Image 1: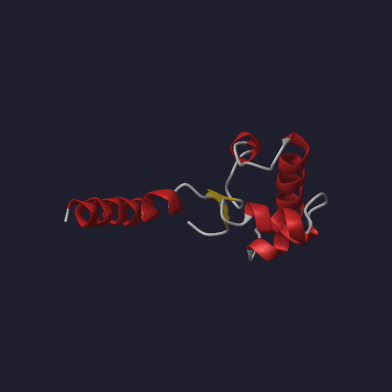
Image 2: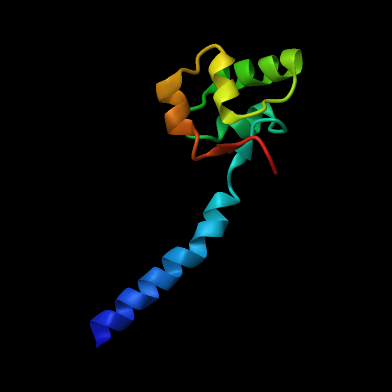
Length: 88
């Protein structure tokens, strides 16, 4: 009985944190250089490349558009995709 209660409590906590975690995604279309650098896997040079590309070409239509940025390949994008968004 106690085991089921604890399991139910853990599940409720996990499910309630989902929206809070999702809200922490960084929007690559509006983020500053400093904000981009807070993303795990984006350093100074990659953040600068994202901002430069965005200023030159315009907003990103999708996260896959980041593949056009120097220094971002498929593996890196896969690691970053859960931390980034292109919409508010």
